[in-house]
Image 1 (cartoon, rainbow, N blue to C red):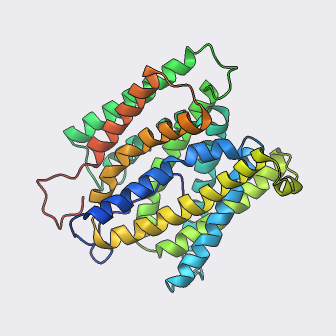
Image 2: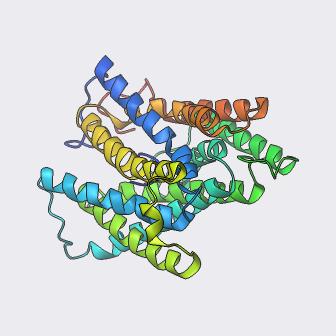
Image 3: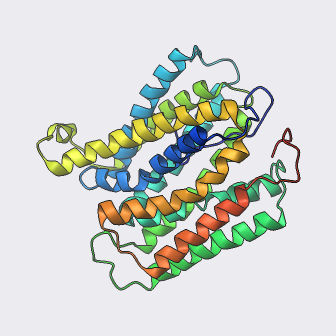
Amino acid sequence: MSTAPQLEPDAPGLVGQQPLTLTSVLLVMVTVVVWAGTPTAVRFSTDLLPPITVAGLRFALAAIFMAAWAWLHGTGLKINPGELRPMLLGGLLMFLQIGTFTLGVHYSNASHGSIFINTYIFWVVAIDHFVTKHDRLTIRKGFGLIFAAAGAGLILSSTVGSQTIDVAESASINGDLLLVLSAFILGGKICYTKNVVARIAPDRFIFWHDVFGVALFAVCAFGVERFDPTQLLQIDNPRMQAALWGIAYQGFAVAGLCYALQTRLLEKHAASKVAVFSFATPLFGVLFAVLLRGDPISSTLFVSGLSIAIGILLVNYPSRSKPATTTP
């Protein structure tokens, strides 16, 4: 699982066209709320553990989940001819995206992580329009991108002008720029994944891209971080308990629960109908950061989160002019 739940394009045989029920909406909101807690979980984990190590442990747990998931659904994990290269590239993209995200949240804060990572939608739309040409830019999407860009620019400008860089949970411009970079990589990774899973079973691709990503995290952590594995045994330390719960949340709840629920939802409903609810993610993310981490809240933070939420809603809202069987 990468930072954001990745909704694949609607395709015959992959998703249904059933209308959303109350149960489905509640399940979609569960995935939105769970994913929104990721930046806050990262901050709890990096309080005591090095960021790259945290990212590696997170996806080691995700790989374990995906192995069990594939086994339960009868998906073979053997790499077929022609699949190794895209899996390796997927692992590299995951390493770069999650690495910059984890470092960005560590050096900034959870609320800024929630806001900036959701600007990935800007890059998805740009790549789909100018590169893959799978989905064209419309006036509505254009306004959505303007809202998202305005929200990101507003919060960046407030960080540059901040005078509280030494206060706990305050943001930093370096951390924010890493988060912007992570969002850019995530946008590219989502477009790449959409293309790859049309040729490779999604369960197998995600499992191996997790495995290869973990290998890269291990090499990087060994080279640049100092980590004593015995630290993980200090379970009587409340801060270590919070750090371990944070890793477990990222690995099992985000990569596990979100993936499982999303797969079930896409078996019944179009991706465009499910994706529209993602506008709530930055709002819940900021809420968790403020309540659980004590992130500083301001009118700028609120307006930025709201702007990006509106942008996501405008970009993802399905067009009513298209027939129900049309791929969005």
